[in-house]
Image (cartoon, rainbow, N blue to C red; front, top):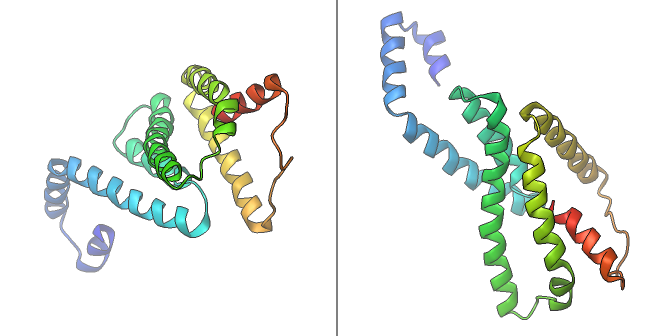
Length: 178
């Protein structure tokens, strides 16, 4: 909209500087508005396509923070952490809903709980030490794999049953958590 005004209405430089100063004063409102619309859009896409909202949320938060001139060293960390925080609360809500409907397989929960928790903690510690640019590349690779999987509509399934081995269950759940 701003660029169209400049192109079609020939705004003077003084008008542009006035608009920029107003936008700077309303920076937090713009930031929150962008996040609200991102949340709505990612929820819509997640429901429509069956992908996680992080595929939308992470890049948008990344670009918003880069636009705000935050350091590249922390921007991807903050974007991913924000997405994980959202996932945490929606997961709690989903677990509770499925528990009320008696759709929660407590056997899986018992076998994987420890591995997922340990994997999450260790994964967060490792991710905090990874350079932000490498996290960007990893995100692009994972998003590309998800997109390719969606295009070819292939279900990736190793087994229909959980392994009987306790150690193997913890290794699998550790990698899921991390």
